[in-house]
Image (cartoon, rainbow, N blue to C red; front, side):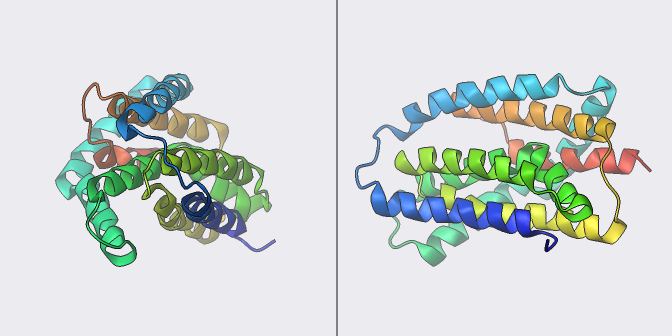
Amino acid sequence: MIPGIGTLINSFAVMGVGLLSRFFIKKEIKNFENNLLPLGLLVLTLGIRESLKSPEFLVTLFAVLIGAIIGTYLKIEERIKSFGEYLHKKFEKGEGEKNKFIESYLTASLIVVTGPLAIVGPFLDVVEGNIELLLIKTALDCFLVLFLTSSGGKGAGYSGISILIYQGFFTLCALAIGGSIDQAMSDSIAGIGGVLLVGVGINLLGIKQIPVGNYILSLFIPFFLAF
């Protein structure tokens, strides 16, 4: 099996569902923000569950704080939004609902790359030729994109590009080091990702806007701690 095929399937399936949704769902579900509330509850619940997987809370604490400091300095979320704005300008016609486009792109991108499957999956793909986790992730991502797109969030489908970049990076890492991720590291990543998903859930519920995109580097910290 070709290394990285799971990530390619994941990425293009998400973009394909986003595109098909726009063609076949002619009548959008109204009230975009209100439609995000049930999704917010689900993401928040998933985040709480995942955060409890962390074998050592101090690792999660350290990773999130360090990742947040670095990410805030680099203005990662602002850069993600700028890329979303670029995609809108490049592929969409007119200025209509640009903010909704960028918001849906940011939301979908954060959800599809924050979970541990986005990191563990590419490693299993390369090391073991096992794409089962990425196929499961693909199904979940496609449902998310279908929901957001049908609610008017046309930027959600473009999160497939984020998947290609993010998971492609970990595919290259797996090819370079030829190693695998043990259970302890996987659980650490899950715990950190869970905290970030809680932040995404809070954003979707409109409780408070947390710049979760700035914290995404937290997911890389366990790799450095392993050395």
